[in-house]
Amino acid sequence: MSKIRFTALFAVFLVALTALVVAGCGGGSSSTSEESSASGGGGGEKLTVGSDIPYPPFEQGKPGNYTGFDVELMEAIGEKIGREVEFQDTSFETIFRDVGQGKFEAVASAATITPEREKEVAFSDPYYLSEQAILVKEGSEIKGLAELEGKTVGAQQGTTGLELGKEKANAGELRPYPEGPDAINALKAGTIEAVIIDAPVAQNAIEEEGGVEIAEKVPTEEEYGIAVAKDSTELLKEINQGLKEVISDGTYTTIFEKWFHLKPPKQFQG
Amino acid sequence: MSQFFNQYFNFNVMGEHFGEVLVGFLQNLLVFAVAAALALTWGLVLALLRQLPGKKPMPIRFVTIAYIDFFRAVPILIIILMISGGVPFLSFLPESVRIPRWFGRPDTFWYGVTALVIVYGAFTAEVYRAGIEAVPRGQMEAARSLGMSHFQAMRHVVVPQGVTKIPAPMLNELISLLKDTTLISVIALSESVLVSREVLSERLNSSALTLTAIFFVIIILPLARVVDKLIARQQLKITRGSHIEVA
Image (tube, rainbow over all chains, first blue to last red):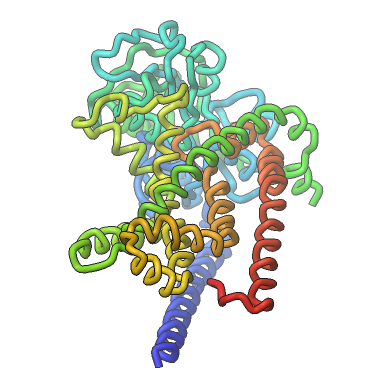
């Protein structure tokens, strides 16, 4: 008797699970068909942009409603070149491989232009100049990069901050976190003593949550660029043109001031 | 296609980063060894608490069952993230517990071990329970009629017989425990998957991940064969007419 009831219960469970899966797939396929019909519309073809979200203030927000400096800048550029921009969340460590393979058309993800990366992808003109910050807990004894020796230091996997840590910090332990905010949380929890991260991200962490401060800003002569696959020369030209227009008409300054509460460097002022 | 092979089977990348990945993999094995020993002990404790007889320990049984159900249901990844993100803020604990650096291992190591023990304690408890319940009731009754207490009967009669019935399912749990040690990469413990992903971001090539997979296969395949052997041995006992074993 109880065996029959168990079997019946199990069957109901299986049916429910199948229904759920089918419904899920159905939803997915209908949304892709929408996308493809939109992209088939000719002139207003969507420009897909890969980005490792969240990385505030460059990229943040929820799927379908992403925002941040990179996002708004890309949208402004998209407007100039007549293409609607669609952001996709992805992982930074695979982002250049994926744009090369055509998973998305461009990368706007606070990505520094480096010679190694240029072997894999093509970069636009720089759209941002960056510094790395040594972020510490408020009142920490660590005053800069030189004092990280022997300390436990965090950074985000695959970033310039991690490279800087490897090359110059001589840390006791260097922990590569999957996401930048993970490292900042670990700093606040006290499990690590410093984080090496892009200065604007550090600034944002201070403004949003507090409890941490920048011990030192390290200029790295880093320039951020928008990456595309090597053979997308036409798209690259369009993006560069769009970027120029966005800078010259002052849209760049507006977006920059909104996200960084600072005036942009001279070459980016219209 | 050649791109695929270059991406995952680039032997140059595997060769150049072999040492790093191996060191990472040893970290996995170390986490596994510590977590397995503790989880097997903790699981037995849970199973025994669950089997306490009579009315008085009812609340203990209830809490134990709730614990086992809860931690079998929650994804381990979430437990790992909650422990590493939460424990450091429990200010009533001394700092050496909040941020444990015991035996020269980093705190992330101990957060990971703790999470795995909490969760796998619940899983192994269920395996122990199956073993204990497979021991015929008469064994416990006979032991009690000889004047043993419930605990003595468990200790000397039931558990020793029960554990002989469960090596195969227990090994399965241990195999998945070994694989789940890679989840600790999410809190930045330098184990093999994290190291491989570092290589990936440096070289833009995934072959180090393939190498990690090979390491796991090399360790786990023999274990899987041992499980097969154990099951076959149990089957043989049944066909010989010994009493029916647990599935």
